[in-house]
Image (cartoon, rainbow, N blue to C red; front, side, top):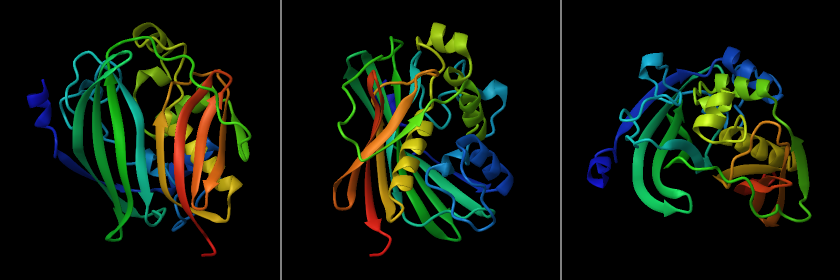
Length: 278
């Protein structure tokens, strides 16, 4: 299998998209954020709402994702998850203009996990606008053999410096799937999520949790400019499980973030920042 999978390393695709105000208005409505005007800076992580391939139903797998074996390698009878990633924010993308994303598969690794064999695929994304690089991203995708998802984990941090409460509704999950053009059925098809992939309910998107986590940091620290953001999923959250985005400054220029609830941590993240007055 590994020889065949190696053929996917270095595979690349380039997507050009207009970052339209109409679509950004839908993102604002989904996340409860202010509406943007032309040439406004697009908030961090909103680039995930663009650059998705517009595939027909016949080009999708049974899970609602694009069928494997195209840009992403095949992974026989495994469930796909967005496991985490790392981003460097160089300059903001601007609304109401064209931008490009170049995606390249940079690593494919097999690992043995507590729930069975795992296949990790790392995809590098470079976002450019007006001829300049704006964002560099590494995205980790994991394919796991069908197994019962983790229901609990270690407790969240003590005495965070900020905290926000979130309880995404089925409507918000559906709308986030819509604005990110994410067809994965675990987010809107209850029977599929529970009976086929074994979740306790509809799954809250990992990218949505990351977006809420980063937004909470920005609201709590308006004098700080985020330069790097890394995040990793610990366990899934399902609809009806309220959670908090919490965090603290660990040392100058660094912060630690978590999404957690009474069952423990669901996502961890780290931020590097600079003062806006530096």
